[in-house]
Image (cartoon, rainbow, N blue to C red):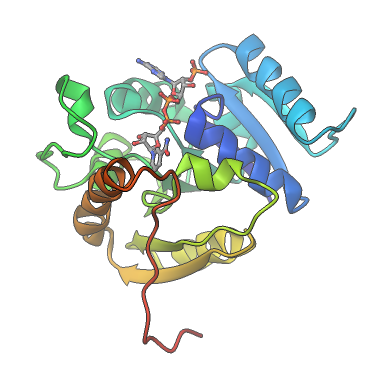
Length: 226
Ligand SMILES: NC(=O)c1ccc[n+]([C@@H]2O[C@H](COP(=O)([O-])OP(=O)(O)OC[C@H]3O[C@@H](n4cnc5c(N)ncnc54)[C@H](OP(=O)(O)O)[C@@H]3O)[C@@H](O)[C@H]2O)c1
């Protein structure tokens, strides 16, 4: 299964790329510019101190969306619409995992506040923008910080809250994300649950600032998971 990370040159995307590369998954970094994606591949080689990473490549977002089986969107809210429009013709009926958090920074505010979206959540906005394709949107990765992901020699001490309307797509996404050491996926229900999950991120950002940490995360306890 090829994983394409759209906007994978950025903080969150690159962290996700590194974690899946470590697990031996075939990963494609997507960018607005193919050469920036290729430079990001070199950055990952440097980080992991490897001359060659055969399971990693970089290309334009459109090509990455076309070639990937599972797509992961890791761009800021301001870039969500533009990025999705460029890949709309290539998403088909694939799974798209949306990590977008609607932070108030999009209108110049602080990162410990969120902005309300007409659609209810960024993930539902993604589903609306891609309406008419058969794409299955799954919301995940919202509460796992880039610091956690990039601390790639350590397990991640954070659960991954996952929402989505397509049960099979959600199952596939969760099986993939569960491969990242330390992460436990929790099925939160339909995509509209992303309205709650996305709002936890600005809380965690605020807690990280207050307690001078980069590793604030969350664990749900007391559930018997399969
Ligand atoms: N950082 C975190 O810890 C974290 C945690 C949880 C969730 N998230 C969410 O993950 C998403 C990505 O966060 P990030 O911190 O990785 O963002 P970022 O580094 O600012 O941007 C990620 C990538 O998006 C593309 N991009 C940026 N601005 C753009 C624009 N105006 N138009 C089109 N493309 C643009 C760029 O890729 P190219 O230039 O290569 O096209 C960039 O490398 C956000 O929605 C964020 O809320 C982040």
